[in-house]
Image 1 (cartoon, rainbow, N blue to C red):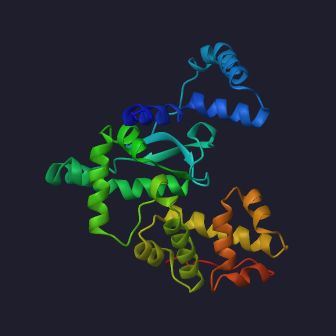
Image 2: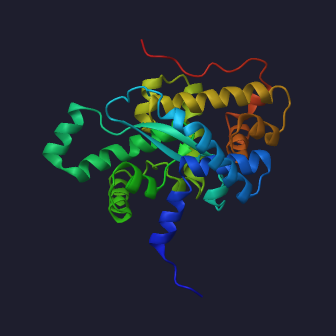
Amino acid sequence: MGVRNVKRQELRRLEEKTLDARFLTEVQQGLSCSPFESEAVLQVVKEVYFPFLDQVESAPTVPGKLTVIGVCADEPAGKPISKCEKRVVSLTLHRGAADDELLRHKGAAAFRQARIPDLCQEALSQGVLLTREDLAYRIFTDGTRTISRDLAALRQQQPAVPIPLRSTVHDIGPLLSHRVQIVRLALEGKTMTEICQQMRHSPAAVANYLATFTRVAQLAAQKLQPGQLAFLLRRGRGLIERYLDSPGLSPLGRRTHPPTLCRHDH
């Protein structure tokens, strides 16, 4: 049995999260092309279109923002990265003066640990689960050991608040239970601010969960099965079943109108 080369495996996973890799996956799965054929299509696209794309003036990027390609949150554990659907997300790395102060007074480690939970939630609200490699090489340009130490420190500081990374979410329960708990709080009449404070999620992530639950409720009222709901909504079947089976949420399948979920703060 050969010895695992961890660094090489990390680099291969990163290579599968590029625009080229995303294009190849879309062509292979969408058009049933072989790897050789999809590679040939990619080269033709580059030869025909890229000279013109270089001449197009792109929109200026927002300060502090960066774009990352990640694996879609509903892709199951164990599926090869090369075959997973990927998505481009826009993340807020630097928030301005507040982060300048944090870096100046507490250093880079404190900055990373302050930003990692928000970055992971922001990616998740756009349908992507980040990995340690994404954080290490695509966002903070540090090694995975450094990120692992940061994650350990965050778990020690807040053991009850899971950070939605691909490696931890697909263990698999914590994120699903959090989504269900967020919906339950909304049905209890909690405001967006109250839910965000209690669950330590961003408003965008909470809004995304509630929108998904509302769509599940509307379609379940039409007697669709969990597998059909998962296919139509492009969500994992496990999440759909948790929404349908959880105490206090199971009646949603018998609603004739979508539930009113979340009071806004005044």
